[in-house]
Image (cartoon, rainbow, N blue to C red; front, side, top):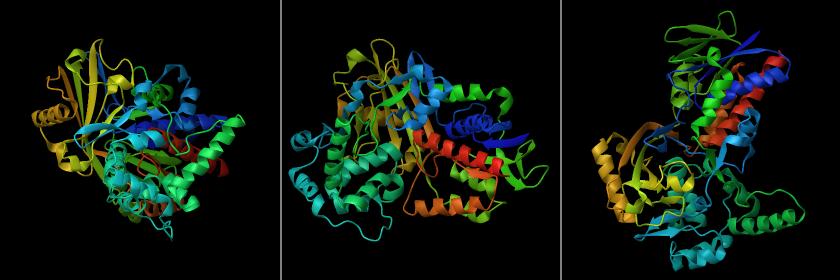
Length: 469
């Protein structure tokens, strides 16, 4: 029997381990899969905490249903009936600027009426079709792209908050082609984002008329989807399918090396295990240490992938003590507004079952690449800063009746300029080490869908290697 070891018990490791077993069975052979996780609990940054009737997400709160990867996995697991789609409120998203919450416009007429962008800023945006496309195909920062194509105001009020909301990142360092490859492709193909949207909208109408299923012309989109008991339900189901005999928790993988009774040896703090396949679904910084002795050059590349900090703050309130309308997803805040938080999600408006009857749950984010030091603030300081922001932005003067604070010192990998080159170097290095694979959100997408898609690719490539020997 062949043996595989997966290091890392987050969504990437759990999905890869499960898919390895199922794909091997489909190929007609049995594969012994062991998952090793340094923490006692599984799930990584996916964790749904239920206290006092509130359901707080420690990390991500769901996935978009516009991509098939996670939905397909849920169907395979028999978990589709457990899925929970977000409320229609989630379509309404806001940016805090100029002392007010401005709804993100969803179409042309809304954009013209919106006070989010000034008229000079709107005129600059209207010039976008006349801006020459970037020649040479070289990578550039999101900030450089925004200034070049859309203007400085659009960068500050639209792009920068979006980058902080998705990546907790700094647009001055983040890579356009690695963070938003579809946008780079649209400029390459059409020369203009506006022209691309017009052409794609026409094609979408034609496809709809022909009865074809279509996605948003802008690329991603879709409905935010989770589980009634929180997104941790997915990792719990995966762990259950693997079974306790396939999981070694409370053990950190320290090193992989060649040799032993099988091609690869995995060393933890207390045991050594041999395997035909080793899949590292660990963060880039941990993977660097693990493979240092096998390929120092790859380890050096992995150490070039930085991580942003993040502090997640959950506040629960009596609904009657908040006068502000909560009919929406929440808001993001441009850095120039001088607030303490990156934004706040109105979690109990997005999903049902997130707060007790008559209560609301607000989840604020602090830190990120622009404010890394915030992760070291004490609980009292964090609570005071969040309360100040909520008072300024939403007029909330009441003290929360429920407070939970979660700190992530290395929360989200940052796809800075040159990230695609680094990933290519890692793939080239891994190709020279048969049986060793890297997967996870450090490489080709940070979202849950991205992690599941990477798990599918990795499992497929690993099984292909085993069957070709």
